[in-house]
Image (cartoon, rainbow, N blue to C red; front, side, top):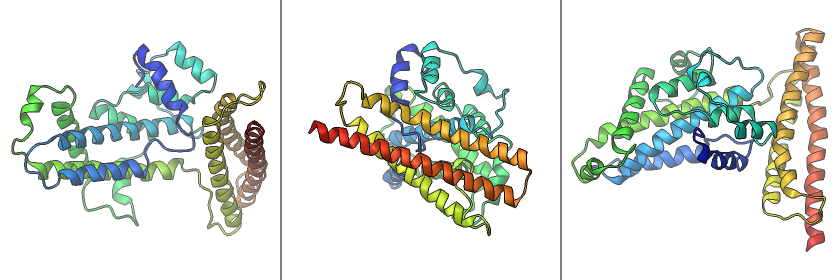
Length: 330
């Protein structure tokens, strides 16, 4: 993604504008892909809509795997396979290293933006990096309570390879060959079937991603379920407040010479990252210091709630302060 020097600034700007509380791929993007599939469903000749569908399919695959890589590397509890080819191919660039050092983006984002998912093989290498130790085929077959149709994982893999091949054939470098194909009778049914399989694969990874990296607390446990509900509620509240503060600072200008809204905004992500890692380290310390058991886990939940409540107060104070400065300006 940023393997060329001229693209580094653009890449840094992309991550700088990405809200760290959000996934790169969300339901809105997946729904747009489904809409693109519907546009070509009844077409009997090859069209630019087919080209658009191939581009969107592969772009979403790249974004989804890149997101999984980012989450895995930023999660302190995940083991990273040092022999994975995507890890070995990451090239160090001083500008990017400097941005990580300044906490303009995380270590996971550094690896994600240095990763190319240009082939099917690299896609599956990225999947292995994002979900180490998973047997994806078995995990897909064991999913319960979902509306996944009766399509085998091998069929999905074959469809993914087909879509990548079609993208490369028609899209990778637009030529007269591609232009000559427009309007020619085309097996759209086969293409639609393959694209729908890719859509299913993307949603499968979305399910794995949110389950593995969602960070939700248990709300059904008999002794700490109620605390878990409070933790999930305050976590959502903090995410919304950070998004509000981030949006507010993007659209406001500094009022006082010592109050730089841009610096405040850029400090949000490293603070949030530090908090998440602190909570994980605290849990690990309590667990090993006091030993496993229900009582210890209950204590961890209580400690997390107290810390998040304090953090929430600081975010609210920061938001109110920035709004007060805008009032002074007006």
